[in-house]
Image (cartoon, rainbow, N blue to C red; front, side):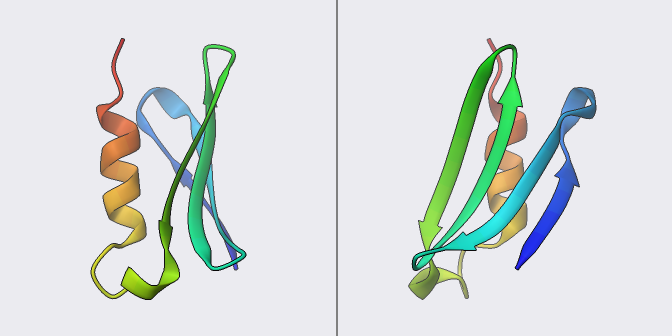
Length: 59
């Protein structure tokens, strides 16, 4: 499963399943970020949760 989402400022993030984890990966200002959670909690944590966290990163 691979999906793409658009974050603030037009940044493209990729959401995928890897080895028992759901992962959101994106690049911003020459840094790569990887946010993940265990698939066993996917009924409580959604891709939107990771998108909210990614959009909250501000520096």
